[in-house]
Image (cartoon, rainbow, N blue to C red; front, side, top):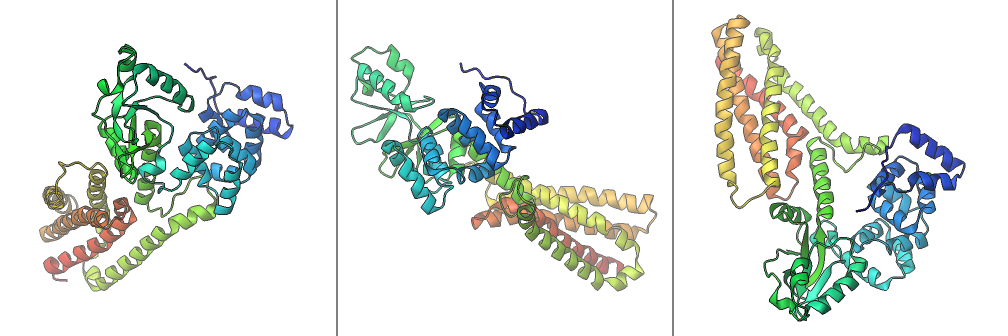
Length: 455
């Protein structure tokens, strides 16, 4: 088992490293990073500026530098690779798995990409990378690797073991040995245990398992992640339209997908309109946040307009204004709760899921129950604690009940509608639901007050 040196990234170490870089203390830098896990070194380089990151990478052994490059944060990676010489990038890509090499190449504009391609001497690796670049990046083909071990069903155990040794030179981790026919079509898989225990002249077709789960090249990466999670797979083979085995997706690739999708949903729910990091520039972060903030401000202005329409009623019942925050906050909370549950269910699809109508009815029953409890509670507080007339308590309670129903309806239906039209339903859980419920909640509140208090 590979051993790594215990490492702690601290401000003191970071400052000392910067001093060593400035003074070009090459041996000291190499010694301090010797034996450190590549993920820790990548985290360290993410904290350095572009010039210093490149300086450190160039000091390290090529394979180590290539491994670190893969682990860099995407923003840092883009800045670093575009400042490197094409020959350097090409030589490092040769040492990566094909999927990682394709990810690096995809960061370059077309002209610079061609320059890097011209520097890649390993023509087999280059061919694999170029094939991967043909696929959309968020599909199975876009995240698969071309490095895997295959065995022809007609081989015997001796020939298979020899082939495993040869093919394994380019495969970092062996999860499965896939069995193919002469047309390269996937037939199944065979375990190393079966191969080792079988007699030397045993044919692979006599011991392989036909029960293998595969995914097509154009399947969305989220669906691939769901399949691997459901069946607890460490890797999954990828096939084309003719059932030919073209690649494999490993669990580490899927972990990256899950993290990426989760970050996108969190940002959408928070009302951030682009993929941003805390380390991005002030302008970039502001540009991503501003659209939804403007919508929120517009909603606030519209809310003020609605309140203005009932100015006469407010002058008659000033106490109505005191309960506006209660109505707005409850409506927003109910809407976010409802939409979050729907978004969660849409992200974990199952053949046993409720239909949209069943989801709506369930949400309606929950809203009726919650609304009734909240309405009674508010009525009791308004009448017996605050000392208002019973009719005023009935008005506030009834308005709250209606707002809960309305907010639950919006929180349930909106994500379903967005999902139906192929729009990320997570955006429904952010400012969109909150702003909409504020406006509708105020309208419902004053509407009920007009009916019951004769405003």
